[in-house]
Image (tube, rainbow, N blue to C red; front, side, top):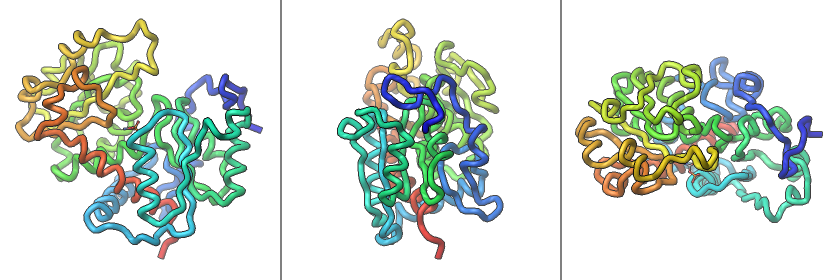
Length: 339
Ligand code: CP
């Protein structure tokens, strides 16, 4: 029993966004009371010590490698209802590098295409000895919903849900920034692009704020700024990209999420690039050592000029590399038996 009406795909049809607040306390435990994490659904519930510990572990895995048998005998399955290149592949690599059995659930060849509910699919996989389910879905709250119904030995990891959260992206972006700048409290960070529809922006802002960054500026045309300031507590908003960039230490560029907009909302690409594209002229407004991040996939010539994406200040491929180490840290944290 799913407890939700079925959508066109035969999946539970979430008409409303299920927030982390509704499920977070029950679904996530951090180390505040010495309890290890079970799921990773959002970064909201991770306080600074837990978040820092994950980043430190990821950094050790990146520089020193990881014990290959750490997750021997564990089974990790990826279940993606939206396309992915970076997140899915890096979770697969991460779990293999830790010695886990790893499976990609192929939706088009599965019984979900015959109308099986997602909870029936979950419980079927659990019966085969699943330890962790890495899930991406276009509905806000679907990973939390699965976490609420998962057997007690199964961990649910959110690989991106709708416009809500992408916690491992928030972690890997924080790790990437921290590798060049340890004084996070003094950073001036600009996040520019389709903020309103961006789960990456939400998780990045949360991670950076938790780590002490005080100056986070969101920049976009009005229609892409957050609908409510409550969506991004402690962040400033502006439509003026040049002004936002003045003196910036980090700029995180985002693509326009066309899949989450009505066609009438699409800006014209050349107009958008003229006002919000990061090119070399604009980047010169930031500090000379400003780091340029983009979670990918990038749209060259729209939100970022090719010479910036491929330039000396770009950290885009570092983000990808850090994604594997970060996901290894998350899997180790959730699945490894404490020594
Ligand atoms: N950054 C990110 O989530 O990329 P993918 O959609 O390729 O996983």
